[in-house]
Image (cartoon, rainbow, N blue to C red; front, top):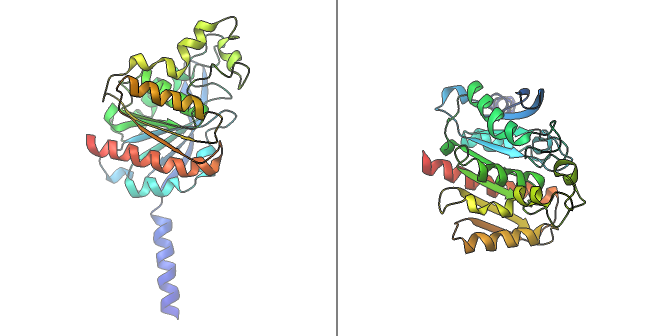
Length: 271
């Protein structure tokens, strides 16, 4: 009995010793003149391995940097098992991850795609190339991930979206969009230039690995379906996943696993 108890204790100690590190750090943004929090998850033996690929994981409207690790704590198991990093930046309240032409305090394209990537690469042993970087997110973060990847294909090699607001023009009165772009009636050009579905002209076949996922009961399902159709028309390869589900954490907890598998397969193919 004592030997069995000792074995169990040693096994538990092994799990505790070999566990991913979850750190909440302040990262600098010169563009917004402030420090921004980010959760950074690294494998236990990061220092003993080759440079690590990184998945940038974006939160949704009204969320923050801690959403993903709080709602899906099993992300640490993925990181430890597959030896990569996850970075969850704070995207502000309703930033939509672009540089606002209205509010200088919301310059989140510059922060996420440039300042944060450079900071992470300078502080961690990462693959400092697009072949070792992917970005995805949920809802507002799904829009942000595709928006940033389309516009910065030199930075990211793979991108995904979960229940993404990939065309926000049908929702002119929602989610602080008018605060970031001005009213749609007054500045339609800003809305047209910053919605993901209008950025497909930036894509070339097989340049960017893409995965798009949205539940059939989601209020963003229609715009995701249309994005898929437009990608098909342009002959842009991509994975498109639909299944029963709504705009909630039950769906995203499942969805993120498909996204991570996709990103890991991309990293493996490029290694």
